[in-house]
Length: 129
Image 1 (cartoon, helix red, strand yellow):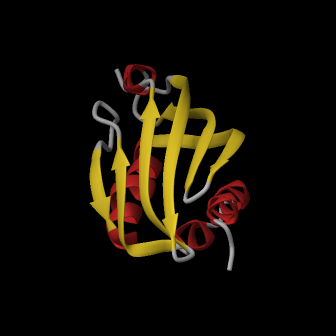
Image 2 (spheres, one colour; image 1 turned 90 degrees about the vertical axis):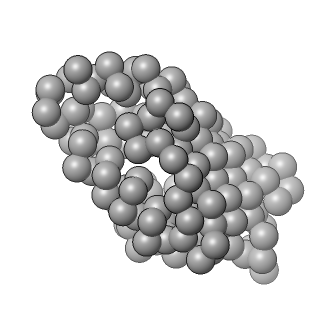
Image 3 (cartoon, helix red, strand yellow; image 1 turned 120 degrees about the vertical axis):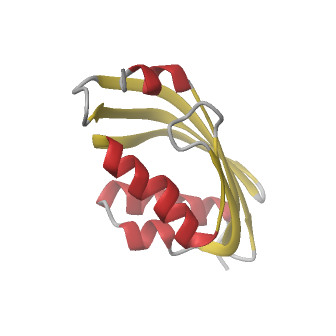
């Protein structure tokens, strides 16, 4: 069985390939995915369909070249912490942004059970105005 670190690393590897199916592959049906208050798609979404629609699809509709660049991935047993940077260009305003970000993942039974994002929401929202 893969470790939690392996499961999360596979998600980021799929992200680097722009492979949405790969990014969603290990998300449990009851996964609770939380985007930080103040972020454009803030909220907690449960399961692949809600996560895809309210996070990945929503961000793609708002931003061109939206990306996450992983800098460090920290193994904490069933929890994994990712540190990196978001970048993108708002489609409506044409303004770019860069924001530091931390993702905290919870993995059990070879599936992602929870995700929580911590980021500088102001940098992202500022690009929208």
